[in-house]
Length: 102
Image 1 (cartoon, rainbow, N blue to C red):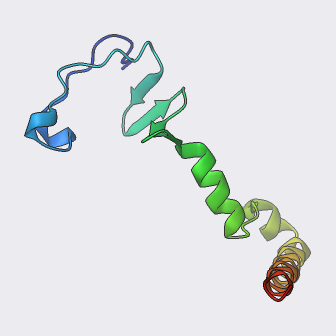
Image 2 (cartoon, rainbow, N blue to C red):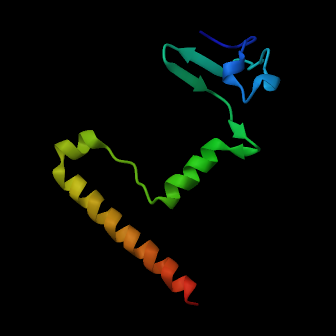
Image 3 (cartoon, helix red, strand yellow):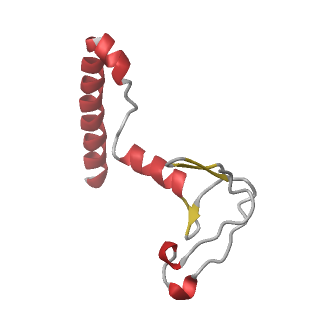
């Protein structure tokens, strides 16, 4: 179902009964299929871009993307990933610690 037109929302989807939203015009940027909702535009909450926030969180947590299918096929890839992750975390922490003592 494409929400390109008007989207009716009830009280349970808003912050409170006084904040009831009667309709939204999403201009085709929100699509729903089964249990999946795709947002094809920037999502801002209180003027903060959610994707930027997630990217910053991802970087701050020192997470790298994993490919579990390849790791099963090539166990040395998993070992290398784990070793890289450990070394990377150690270097980042050491760098942060040295900057706090400067």
